[in-house]
Image (tube, rainbow, N blue to C red):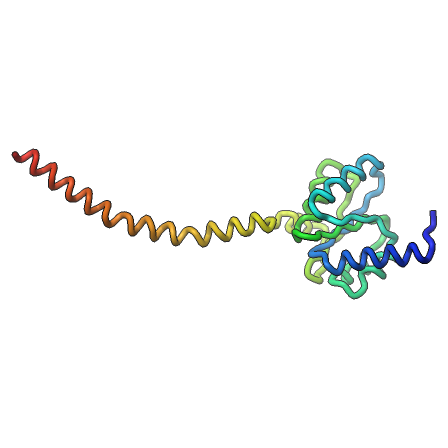
Length: 176
């Protein structure tokens, strides 16, 4: 079913708005995926705050112009589904990679983050990026280590003194 000019403009405006605020984008070929599998993929994307849309390549090129993802325009060929990470830069890559593990019909073609085009092989690196909560947790553990070591070191001085006094006491008790 063909879209009218107004519907096409609405699609371009919607995708452009999402792309302007997205952290990363992933494009994947979906030939042979049935409706139930695509519905499951869309549900996983919604759970991960990933905007996913099947858009004609000409409309996608227009929508991506003027955004960080304009570098993807030359590579948009064939039937593609576009996924944009809204909150976590690795979310779209993670959703697509996880789904592709169980379904070989979904083939990740390209990705973009920070205005740079990534090859399909680099999508795994993007998918393995820690989430915001994981990154904060890792940073806090690194920041906590020196403080913990200092506390242990400071605690050891009175503990040594206590052990020395106890040893002297034990010697005096044995001598008497």
